[in-house]
Image (cartoon, rainbow over all chains, first blue to last red; front, side):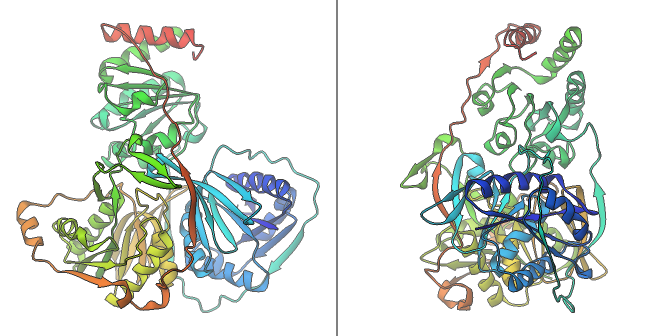
Length: 327
Length: 263
């Protein structure tokens, strides 16, 4: 069976997310006797094929075309469909659950009359059906579902993070297949006119070993100053729940949760956070969770390891002071 | 501009995990859980209303929920939509995202001359994020998922899309399907007066068989199937830290953390 990674490259350099997909793809190929392949499109895709070879792909399809210079959902879908008309589609294609995955995969799936499951945390193979199954959260994370698609190619977007992306290069020969497709005359329907880069702040939340996170209970943007101080005392980063972001108290890039970032710090301090499932889905991988909340009934006290029932405005300054005394 | 907003009833997103159980590999939700239009669907309605306020046009709410949700649709229209359309399908499966996309596509074709379709970025029950881009694929039109701002400039629709690097601003050629995120769009409250006015607004009910049948073949193999489900045990034993004062609580907390070798 053919297992393909939809690879992405930035100016010819394979992305970290793609490397994570290769870790999963290689595991699946080895376990289920499959051939690992790659599909890479857009500018610099030929340059990326050297790296993709070292990542273990046995066959690499490169698709270059001027109209693919910038991602556009319908164009990229058409390009992939054209590719599969020339070369039989793989049985399984892994995409990263990133913006491309969210935009492209369901659009592509219906045009291929296939199906796709998004935001899967794990994949297994079922011998009797010959299909891959993906684990996907439902009801905000209260339920875990096992999903499969009925038609080939099977498409899944895989949740980022938690997989090895060091990818030591392997001795490998790959068949590189440049694919010419005809997209001429296809109208471009969406065009990027500006990119805004998120402020670097204290670094990526996904890499932080300590996170201090605030929710609705913070009450306003000013309260986050205390959280920043506490985070600084631990050398950590500041996160937030969707409520705090939607209220405009902190920038969206800080949001942790099912529709935000997934983090796995050593220490997660949840301040004024109720403990809604969608938020916990983003932080429950933390080794230790401390909750500060003045509502004793808050669900967070069933999800945290330590809890303080108190007003965060009283508690946080003391925590900051104590931390500096002992560190 | 004619804007269609696709909305769907979901069980209260804040329902506790104890409200969920599994029977015959299907998810069962306790009766006491109320059903609402999810937060992202509400954001889509708000986005549509702001566009209508600023640039004129018509906002139509579209749902596949059974027609006995008429009352909830009227409530939803009270915030400012012009009319609502319900599509009735005996075989409606609210967990079948691709089936939903097919039925919505058929309804949108029947409505005709639709400029913009807005959906929430994901439904609070399936958390799938499939309907909007799948709908765009079926209509073969412009698509952008997870959009946090929509405006119009010089005859073009301009959207700010959440992106991996931060955000992207896109010019979009209509017709388009966009999925909306909640950051900048919180649905306004409806006044009592507008709730009463909404009762007079049109709620059309179409049977699925009335829609162009190309994409709505009943009994078709669902593109995506849920094979099984379980409720993960996520409860953690929490040590509630004692103390008569905040000073004591914090002091005790750090003592515990040191004792447990967390610090």
